[in-house]
Image (cartoon, rainbow, N blue to C red):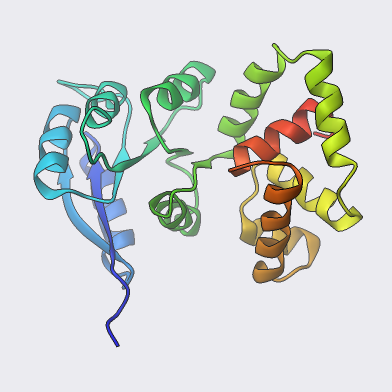
Length: 221
């Protein structure tokens, strides 16, 4: 039986210490293949187009070409990689600009290593991954334009949930990962995944951000 394909990751950051730390963290994993490093956005775009990574870990503030412009450039390609913006700053503008540029994830550099690995796995599987701060920023911007009809719709959809599903929905709205929800609610990770799957169906959501938006629209978080 052949082993599962490894997730090919490219690190793009102008800080050599950050590149070294990420390389050390990812290099020893069986499910991830570190295919290269780049010190600026332009070099990162060129390397991504040559090596075809599955996921790019992208800094924002870099010389030559910043991470946002590099992300936009990659998303013009027919087969663009997933991009996780990994930055020191969590300013609202950075979050919104990164998402607008096409980023699939947004994490701070002080994110614990297991969470960064989880983000790579989830983004590679097509699921967006945002830090709690980024999730709150995105939802706050959306809520400012929320209409009474949308608030009422969110409340009606949430009424269909069981008590446990409501607890899980609130945790998703707070930006927690499945492992963090499991620890908080004293559940197993597979049980949390099953609850999240039911939330997708009941709330007519296609990703966790939409679940979080529904919870915030109803004022539960």
